[in-house]
Image (cartoon, rainbow, N blue to C red):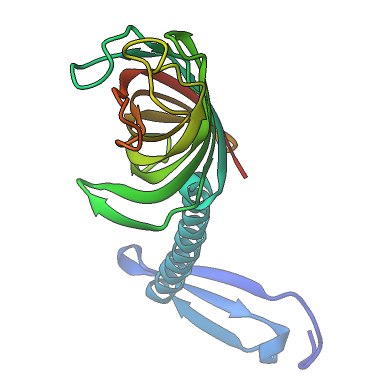
Length: 246
């Protein structure tokens, strides 16, 4: 083949003594001259190429794993939530009215995104706020209902996968009822009343858009001495909550 002409190179392998060999590369690009390549050089080239390919593959796999992990960790605490809560409360304790009240609270609740968070026991403890509209018919008692609003703080202790959280909430508000205290002993003395509550339980994140909560709810209702008739109502019972994030 004439020098300087294009063509396909030719590799020849010569076996030397003691199992050694050398490769001869004859290519037009080298003007037909022989280029000797030792076995050690070929080995180094091959090993270097394999190592570079492995490093690039591992880097790509690492990026993909990081992206999958970030996508898998859904953050429900960064969203606003709306929840419908329903339950049943029974009169408890000796400090309030001794009438056997049974209250059926129905609540429409808004929860804010997180206010702040801390790491406690390897889980995230998140502080949020909640605001509720209270619609509470009385299944038993001289009054028939309590209607009002309440607000409070909400602590949620989340697992790393954001599938479950333990929670505690406390707060208070105001409302109105059809008081019967001047007609029935042990009933409430005026229509305008205050309330405060504590609420604890567990939350399960069923999907990115929906959660279910089961908890125990304590509520106190009274007029705080604004009327001379003020027995108050202490009640406790289970609450179920279905929430939607947006």
